[in-house]
Length: 234
Image (cartoon, rainbow, N blue to C red):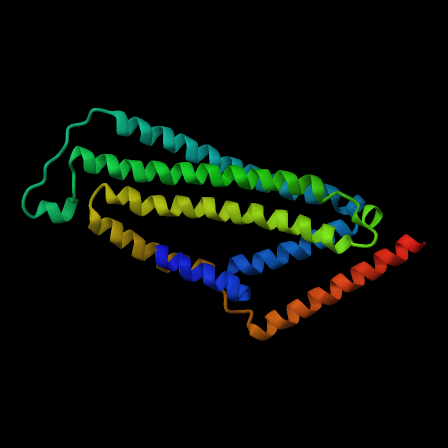
């Protein structure tokens, strides 16, 4: 799982158009630019869209803190420790009290991390919901593209934190199966890696499309600046 996500991070940074996360980040920048082009007309739509994202992050954060409380109760309960013998050592792993505490603590850290990441996602989405209605052409006539890029960056950071919080939930599955032994944990990791590969990788956009998109993005920003300068002169 760790190696897969390290490879995915490399693909997102170097070849964003080959991953779903990178493509969504590009499209969110286009969406933010479109919404801010006419904030009076698109303001309600933008706020409603961001509110839906805040509700999704709130739901995941509530689930994470609830599961963290449950795991904490299981850790502090006085359960009897099982001592496997013979071949059960390989199947069940370490079932001593210390071993079970380490396993439950790993799951607890995973859910707490998911909670904190979703809180950060709510923070950035809340900032973006206010900033996206700022009339950039009126208050920043010379550098409106910078204002739009800042809002798009806040929106993307909120989405990144939401994705990381969701990944923390994914990591909790093999950690939970670790309680039943190393074999279920390894099998769950292999299944998750295969599933996430098909969910994260997209081959519809090639390197040529990536270059064309970057060029069109630069041209659109130049037109945006020219239009705003003209409007400011008028």
